[in-house]
Length: 443
Ligand code: CS2
Image (cartoon, rainbow, N blue to C red; front, side, top):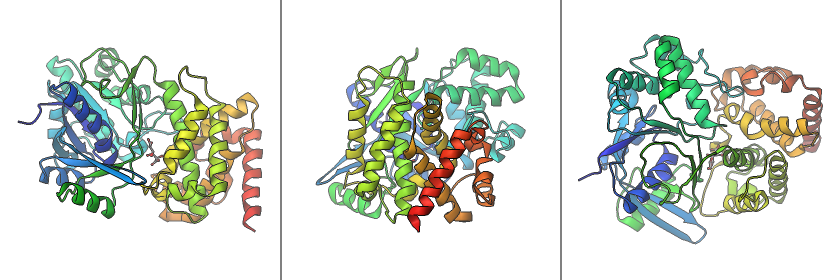
């Protein structure tokens, strides 16, 4: 018999299947419990269909240079496509058995203003959900619909864990959910504030899109034609803020349960994700296709190290976290020749990623009187990438970005740059110098 469900997960892309589902699988092997996962796709139906067709069982393939291993995973017990049946998803969220809700909906899935973290009430999905809250489309809309039902029934609400690379993801999600609730029921918003935990998490595992080659390898190793398999690097980390409530034996399975996640999360977003975005834009402009290729380029490897040093200088030291060796371990992970992580995958949605990955490093460096030329060079490369891509850019703000006639127009896009940085003469001087330098190196 399958494990009874206890977790609803929103966003069943490759990352979830290689990360939270894998931790839950390991946890269930150590300590069985009612922690089956109901995995929900809020957009495409490809993954829920593929999972359903194979009884929600799939393989995780881990790859490094000369080694590949597979692990079967069956912690997901049901896969749903939200747009086809939003009522069923709300019912699963509100089910008394659901003690935990996790999310990996990517940055843009929060429908927030990246520079401030506030709810973007002009977002089409949020506007639609506010007009018809019982028939949601957005992650925030689903959470509020589920919580509203739970409150009506007098049940204990689940803990809600954002597992995306957003700054202070727990607090940010709590704020988005409360703001949305305030729009139609102030009592619900107050109840959420009082009764629902939104623990912060830091998630880390490099999970590229699964390729035909990965699927063929899984077939060879397992003898099974697996349409829902995923590929990842061997490394994995999950730091979770502790909360009062039941959970799978995630800690025994390797997750770190800590009182405060912020220092880990900031280090990860600024060093790993910041370097990733830099490698994506500069790497693509230099003609590279994958992270491994980009980091093998000595110029980019040097820049990645310097960017991580600039970012590290903005962080408060964390006992037990040595940022210099962390940076070196990241360079090694990026170089993993078994992982074909395409730069185009990382380059997408830059408007949602830049503030926390690069602009935070810049703002904090300027405030401390430090220079950060590599962070500026990365932003400059993004600007060039945006210009070259025009309307083919994959980004929720493509219309505004493609309409920008010059750098000043781009800087005026406040969901990305906020209002302070573009007015700061130190920021402008350094950015324009970096742009001039890039133009000069291209001549
Ligand atoms: C990447 C991340 O696609 C991206 O933007 O930077 O998905 C990255 O691979 C993960 O955060 C690693 O934990």
